[in-house]
Length: 297
Image 1 (cartoon, rainbow, N blue to C red):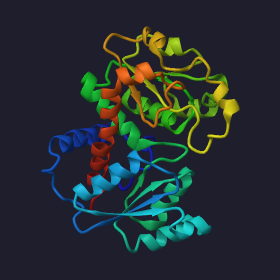
Image 2 (image 1 turned 45 degrees about the vertical axis):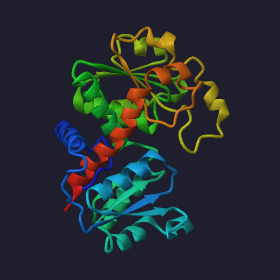
Image 3 (image 1 turned 135 degrees about the horizontal axis):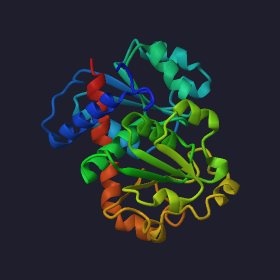
Image 4 (image 1 turned 180 degrees about the vertical axis):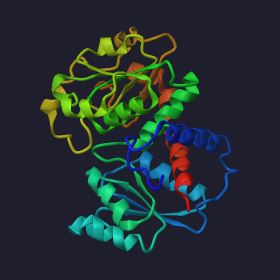
C-alpha cells in the first residue's frame, strides 16, 4: 500500500492488518518506535476539522515526525493552482501528505503527481480513516465484526455510508442502511458494489432490528449546511431510545462527531453511549498512526 485513498482500494487482509497494528500502537502508546523520525508530513486541509487535525498532528509527532499544517488559505491551491502542480512541488520537499478536501479526484491526483505517501483524511466520497477507527471500536467492544449486523441511520450516500458499504463488501459483515429515498445510493453504485450483505431501506426500525452496532452521522454533510429542505426529509431518522429497542442486546451506538443533539441523535442516547462514542473518537489517533506506520519509508 503506497497511499490510503479509500476503503474501496483496500483488501480484507490490509484492513485487518491495519487494525491489528492500531491495537498494538494503542497498547504501546508512549513506547512506540519512531518510523517517521526526520520526516515532515504536510497536512493540507480545505475543510475545517477538530478530531482529524488533532489526531494526525499528535500521531505524526508521536511517531517521530513533524506535521506541517497548511489550510486552503495558506497555499496557492486557495488561489486556483492546479492540485497536480502543488503535488509536484510538495513531493520534492516533504515525505508524505494528509489531505482533507472536497473532491476525491484531488487526493488521487495528488498521490499520482507527488509520488509520496498520501492519506485521504476525508473527501466528499470517502472517509477511510474514520471507518478504520470505527472498526477498531467494534473490535474492542464486540471482539469482532464477524457475524454482526451494523445499521447506519441517516444519509445513505454520504462519504461515511460509501466507506461503510465498501467495508462491508470487503469484510463480509451485514450492513443495513436506512435513509430517505432521495438520499439512497444510486443503482449504478449498488451494481458496482455488488454486495448482497448490504441492504438499503427507508425504515430505520427495519435497519436497526437485530443490529449489534447502530451508527449515525450528521444529516447534512460539510458544505450542505444551508440545505434545510433536505434536513426535513430526515424526520423519523433520529437515533433515539425507541429505535434502539429494536437492536440486539448489548448493542453499541457510534457517531463520528460532531453531533447535533436533538437531530440525528437524541441527547439521552448520546449521553448513554458517550463512553463508546468518545472511545471511537480516540481511536482515530491509533488507527491513523497504524496507517502512517504502514506508509513510512
